[in-house]
Length: 424
Image 1: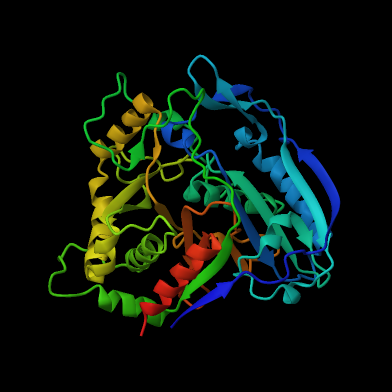
Image 2 (image 1 turned 90 degrees about the vertical axis):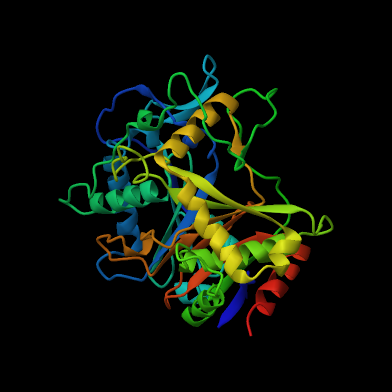
């Protein structure tokens, strides 16, 4: 019903570098500074992903690499900022992108292994960090991508990848024309925050430049917690009781996030205190919540965090339905007025998300449905990173849900225990 996949033993993919170059836009682009919204400003960290493809007789890895290189050159025209460089505007103290056509990194490599030898791609393999455009001895290949979150949210990244795939064909137009007007999420003048925003905190004001949403680097264990459809239905049934509100949304995300929140809060190490308040952050898309709505093709970060907070003792003792109800209620607070208040609060305080744990859903992203000339990926997903404060959940091929958890060994042992004990 529910199981745990630890990190596999094979972490060295025996990769040989073949080419490492900068790729430039295929046409001249305008040199300008790209405004980054207050939401973009606080998401300055990298998100690595891996996309695996079976061997195709018409597209051996060397042909794929050539096609992708040409596709990247073409897509860097409408996405000119991806060939630019971050810079700090010292007058405003804001991060922006210098669209200077300095180039995007492009790496080609080969591995001594075949794809079959890697096993299940969903395994949180540290070796996947080595992936670029990487060919395997079986003729299959992988595309490893690493993009800064300040450039895109998940929907924006998916659109970019779809557009990159179209440009690998000989005669296809962009699938979506991206909307680059990030001033659509600029703060009001003057900014005024009508709401309290406990999901953010004001960092040390002595620091220069925009705050950085990061965590300290330490040795972590990485595991995938797999929930089958049967396990998810068990959680949904457990979330239903006579006290549940008719407005509570008992979704797959809400029940999985509730379980993860409980396990994480109760697994804290030596600092565990039943009176301690634990806050879960839930990433939500605000495109359709604004008035007027943002274009669906909006290219920057159009996400905010909803929150749920409770004492550890309550998370341990309360019925599961109450946790699901709290998570369900969080997004309902994020109206047009609330979102604009957040953006203005960030303008005033230069704040950062404030929570013990964030559950970021990739359930509706369709990276594995992107069609390249050589077909769809057999697997697409996140690659493990140094972040222990974020759990990524993404679809399983069997209609279940995978949760990628990264924690210090002692905390992981407790997390796993609480996870297993929740199921019969």
